[in-house]
Length: 332
Ligand code: DP6
Image (cartoon, rainbow, N blue to C red):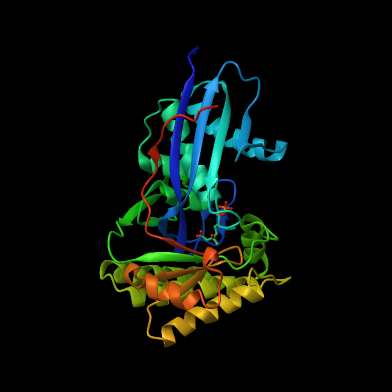
């Protein structure tokens, strides 16, 4: 193989309404439960991969910064899966930009690995179907499996140790009156990675035993609510699901939490929005920021309320986002 292989893709991040928290098989990145998310328009990664003879080793440049050995190793392991499929040992240069508003502190691994999976597939001309790409992205980060699709997306947990049975698929286009608002309350880097944190929760939280049952029930109900476009139901189920996930962490031993004082204030602000007659529910992930699920038509009123207590720069509105797509090659 002597020619160069290059492709560039954009993939959008997603926020889970029914959370993934825990793996039943860490090597195969198989989750304990299925999960369901909304892909967001406002946050995305743009990633280019170039496989060529010129490279003696893999390189990884993120937001114009060469990355540490450790980060490059993670990318190399991911690229190996694609090299194996193409039966090539060409090294690659990966150039990526995270278009997450500065210091938003939102998870970028989902969009990053989804974009990289698509770029590898395009560059190496593998023609893998979306389902297969979702499985490949899962090996980078579990939540990345869901960023292969737009709108509401379900990630199936699959069966046993069958890696091929766990992948995401579109559930609903979300082409109706729905939006998500990210409320950036704190810009500090998260103290512990979700990967370590979810494993610690499984190993030490007595509340974890209930988690899988709760998720199965929440998933069934939210799917009905999405099909009915019942945003109150969607919001209530998502908010409760997020709190149950965080409760498993509070009960871990030693206990830990992603809640910060400002997160609690933001959640209270959302409850106040409801008292004022607005439709708004919150969710929160492995970081202190709070995301609000609401009808797009109520965004102006919600923004007006929130901007009394929060800096408008920290209120970022997003509509549902698309599946990954190719973009022009970066100029180096
Ligand atoms: C709280 O997908 O980042 O955002 O699979 O170990 O890479 P790894 O974890 P990751 O965990 C996401 C956790 C979450 C919930 C969710 O997105 O479903």
